[in-house]
Amino acid sequence: MNNEMINGEQYLQNARILVQHLESKNYDDAEKSLCDLTHIQETELYQELGKLTRELHNTLSGFRVDSRIESLAEQGIPDAKERLNFVIQMTDQAAHKTLTAVEESIPVCDEMVKSTEDISEKWKKFTSRDMSADQFREMAREISIYLESSSGKTTILRESLSDIMMAQEFQDLSGQTIRRVINLVQEMEESLIGIIRISSRHSNDESEKTNKKETGLQGPQIPGKEDEDALKNQDEVDDLLSSLGF
Amino acid sequence: MNKDMKILIVDDFSTMRRIIKNLLRDLGFSNTSEADDGNTALPMLKSGGFDFLVSDWNMPGMQGIDLLKAVRSDPDLSTLPVLLVTAESKKEQIIEAAQAGVNGYIVKPFNATTLKEKIEKIFERIDAGNG
Image (cartoon, rainbow over the protein chains, first blue to last red):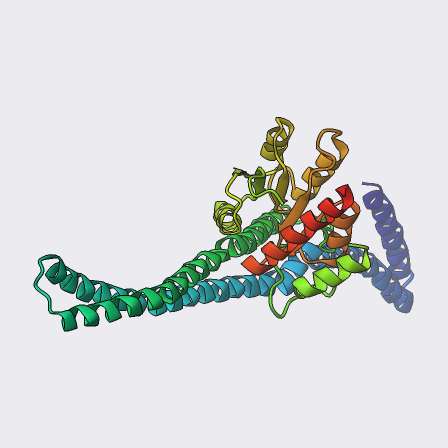
């Protein structure tokens, strides 16, 4: 409003000067006055253009400044990929560990079943008194072999069952890892909603920085992405604890 | 070490609770109870009778470290032996646990031998302290 008044007065003044110059046939000065007149308009145009440029710049740097999006794209997504790969790796290991234990156990069970069947066949003959002394000695030998081997075989089975049980710990570790990825996806969703809000408002107001360094609990360390402060194994944990007087 | 001692296992993942329960049973401890976080565990501990606490760290609700601190600050529970079994392996966390008065610290993934060794060590120290 104020600007318009000043411009209006300036137009009028310049126009008067122009008329004066024209009336006095002073064409050189008239041309100069004409330039002054258009100059005012140009200035307005430049100002408007400047305003637009600034808005555009602010909007663009608004995107750039939102470090949450930047860190999500630069670290979050690769981090999520590695975490999910780690889950694949853990479930793969658990499945193989379980399958190996099963593959080792089945033949042991088969052998035990076969020996038991052989012996019980002979035992039936013995109880129905249908057995020679030689056959009896043969059966006695088989029974003692069976008894000797069965303790070793049940130990193998026991170990396999323990292995299968321990393999299930992948569920806890992969569960913790997937939880973190879910959090990341949620954060990304919020950031995307933020972008939509910024672009629909074409304003450059708050772009809250939340580029916090990850502190607190980290869950399982991801191979290749280990925290430098994280200890590698139980031995290192024990060493640290013993240095603390444990 | 009393094989009949009452042990509370605290972990938010039921599979891990079952694994620890089975491992403890293999070691001869079958008097175990379970809780899924510190908030559930603390009232159980306060109601009494527990001789040993095996807890995870990272749990929704009350975390293991806060459970440990609550136990240490409760006059009735302050001497309860506590073993943390957790995936947290950062130095500062282990130091924090040590300062809070943990008796043993196992990082996941772990095995039956480690569990056995740590439990034996904890009770050896306690027995030595009492004797």
